[in-house]
Length: 185
Image (cartoon, rainbow, N blue to C red):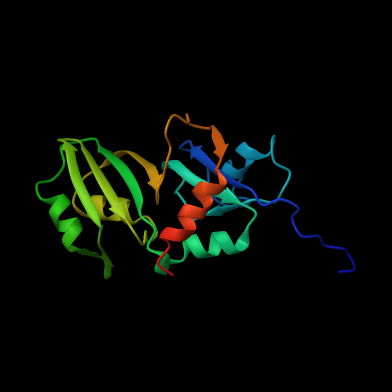
């Protein structure tokens, strides 16, 4: 369009602890708050979320201006683990953890967790490698388990640690390198 474009001078990699109520996209036609806005005060670069969390979920999400990094990490063939803590309003249905690990078909779509672990009567850890759209919510809903809270606590080998909701930190060069190393693609 006759405008000069420039390569980003510095690649940035940011881990955000996304609060519930924020959408993971660059803008929202419905006027809902977007997670990237939480980073605008410190970063002027155009940042993209690597993967997504639905509006009602909270937790770890990575933002970057490195398109190759984002594409590699978010492609299903990378098989990057994502760990979630799921809290339900009522006791977990018996055997949901085992069924999810073996694989469950909901509305013609097959969902399978890499790992599940019941923590207590209302809480389960779920590890996914593909992460289809709203996978955990669909599986739990199909089993009659109303989700009270869904939080992603880990992406690959990167954990939230002590980052509070709405806060963020830059990933170290070593963390970026290690994420790329564990990609299967």
